[in-house]
Length: 466
Ligand code: TYM
Image (tube, rainbow, N blue to C red):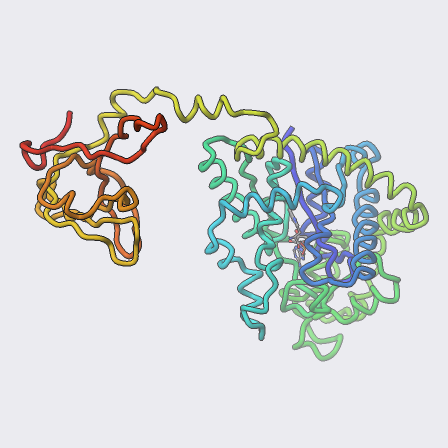
């Protein structure tokens, strides 16, 4: 069975509006029939804006009640019992995972994130933006990856975050050469990708004050509906009205009875029904549509023991999956609790590189044209070496500590590795490496590890060892 995960942040006052329902919760309910479903109250995400403990706690509880009421209101009991509903902060692996995946994520990926860029557009200085907001996509990636989700149902505003998550999973798997994380797909039905607010202009959102609530009192919901944008060109109820862009008809498309709505549309276009009448019809449709969820809300509100039980069981089931994933992550990055010294030795000090691999190392005879102490360093000697190419190479050796001076090199020939990736040494790059061997044991019995350079006197400059 494929797995889905999604989350909602307890922002605003924690309550849900019809944009959240259409853009997210409706999909959770539908997909839960055929998917193992993890739904999370993303309370740690709330910290980017809410830094008052009472407010945060209030919002979390409101969101828990709202979301559970929708799920219980619209699902059968067995469907509901299959859902794993939990609080993000009840599973400490979210932050552990975030802190690990930080290390495989380029800064540029986060700088391109909309939430951060939007914040920059407002009158906020970059230096004042909190790091939590900047790294928000990392926490969200951890949320998703921890559960090895196949599918993430969200509104369009979260699409980029799921794409970032895919990128991060890809980087991690590539770096550690193991498919530790599954790459998730977003699930965003077109018709609800962005549900517009009652202003008819912008995305429905609590902070913009353009919402239609689900669980507020009837008076509040009626008022929100009465304030909805309809057809500004229509002055009187007898004027022909327009349906396109009219928010009342947009919402009716989801919550009204199709034949009644079709009839109302005809009447509206013919100037035979007033705005107030269609709004009243929308209000009644909402109350009837959300009726089962509103009753479930009252029930849950009066039964905190049941809510705690649901959260407790969700926590246990979420923990077991998250623990399993983190075991794989810890193993991949090398922080297992197993004493693995011998395995490490095997994997690194093994004598086992193939002849073909060894043949890739290019070693040539080089003539040192010039040698000088590198200014600003007490170890490095800078060699200018002719290895038989058009131009000479700069190659550093860090041996002044052993008593070597430039004179030990100037005009002489040694062996050099010539196909190493250049390595930065102070302000220059070393374009190769001179070969040396350990000295014999000193008379004192210890190991005198002064390197001795392998002379290539008399050999053709540029000749290759083979
Ligand atoms: P949040 O809390 O802002 O929104 C919850 C869900 O509702 C959708 N949504 C909308 N969809 C269509 N039209 C609208 N007007 C509208 N308003 C909200 C959102 O797209 C979202 O799907 N970062 C996430 C929460 C999160 C999460 C996760 C989601 C945290 N971790 C892991 C998925 C997977 C957020 O703040 O959503």
